[in-house]
Image (cartoon, rainbow, N blue to C red; front, side, top):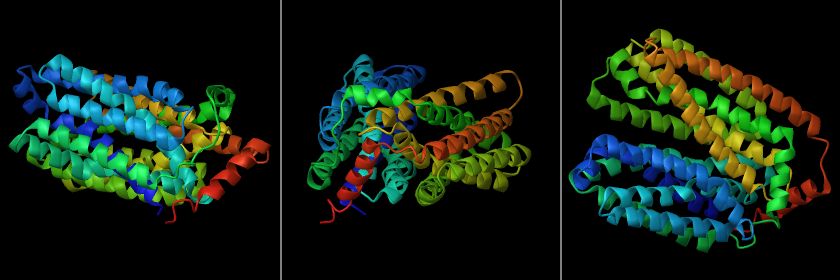
Length: 405
């Protein structure tokens, strides 16, 4: 494994931890700043807004620089944002610091995915992206529980300060291991040209619809486990840790299978997700079955992420591809919002906590249909490789040994 991928994974771990750990520190932050827990909950929305705004904006600004320069600059923003959040004396300043931190999120994953696939042979592109994303899944297994524990027994400010240090470690790794020439000449006009391709929009649509299935269910996982599965509240965190382990395994396995089977793997995976959700809805009152099905659901969901991320970059067929890669990160956030909203809609309609599972199953099947269409479109364009595409392919092959030392 190129060591530069380790630097990207460390950065993903820091970003994942800072995004989700606030959910576990809401009471401590509220007490520390003398505000309500609901007010602190707005930090989650503020962060999401920062991701949506920052992904295309900072990626577009970074096109004039090499991926290493852009990634380092994004991590500087991340470090400054977390440091300011750790020191924020008021609620308003904490909100501002969280938005600043979030600006780096989508762009880092977008540019990082493009950089990751250039570090390996083209046949291993999805696997390289999955190794970076593993840092994000490990954040839910290690970073978030540990951060919550430290916040409860020490201070939430210590947690955010420690996350800033993770950003510093990422910067050091990028400077030491990321090849300085791991990039291709590109500009905003060339990157925008990718959005003329119907295949790009098909993959973005697949992301928004298919992954809405994940968030329709996961957004309400706590009441699903306690109200339906009969799991004591104190056991929810260990169960979510199991879910996190499943997502990590899924990410790694998905990277390998995605390189081999592409959209076929995505289509089959989404159909399998739909099947798991149907069974989950029928067996949710059985504790062991509920936990097992939740873990399998998480494993399947996260196995597909790196495949789709790599697919949208391939679909762009332009040098670089950072902008469409970042756009796909935005699509993931849209999926988060849409899935959670649809889940809330059916629950508020009095249909119960199994209703989001049925909604998720439908979304997954629609996503599978889009994956089939994307596979067909990909096959039709496979022979339509331009000189620019061939140069891109050759360039990535030349870089595969750049970090061998």
